[in-house]
Length: 338
Image 1 (tube, one colour):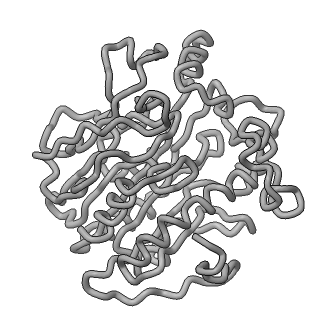
Image 2 (cartoon, rainbow, N blue to C red):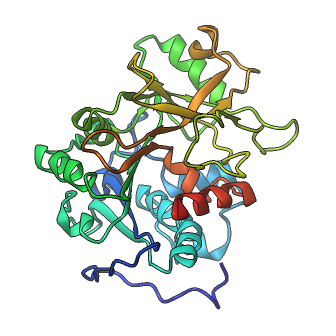
């Protein structure tokens, strides 16, 4: 988006509630992190922290060597990396805002100023689609309270609601250092430590709401040779009776995506709508176990008292840090109109 078309940025103000308009979905994004706890992590720690902006500049050189990412204009520590996530969400916000005619609200569990906002009616009252992006490191001890789980359960009794859960990858679970190194060599991202475990908050929500899924590993998707264009998804079109993936072929390239493992044997509870083929050029424990694809997009249709949909999709699918194309934008528009 050009500077000429971008609206003025606001900060440190209370959200103005959006009015319900039939057919115009109101999206809200909830970053599950404690911004201060993530930003204040000791940068001498090797594991379970975000990279600093300086580390990203070094590895990504010269991509971030323009003035807007310099110390004059951009935070250089871990906070700078967190701000990259915020900036990369703008394209999604713009696309969905244009389709729905409603602004996309963005919340943080604990923001830069230390203001804590649990999921409650302040967020849910004017939201139809809530996106919970699980980018909290487990070591920061974020966990959903019983009150938050009950608030979401009540939210989902409303007709037309949708909850999108996006726990990120879980790399380096094994205590075996050789296995951690194997995972690291598989995804090939020097910015990801040998152990980087995300999503305690989202996991606690899934447990409380009875979502039979666990985020596991960080798998590198297969790409078209010589490019970073992912090969097409394996889509279960017969299960996608809502049309979430209509005209969608691919999502986005990201070096370490979670496998959303289904933990129930009951086929009627959850549907795996899309799987991503894995880059098989480097070994990985998941590949060695006989797998060539991982679960990428899942759907729990309304059931019983739950009138709303529950979807699972990684947060990187909604950001442009790692690219994007017409197929990805089509997916965003499908979510906004189904």
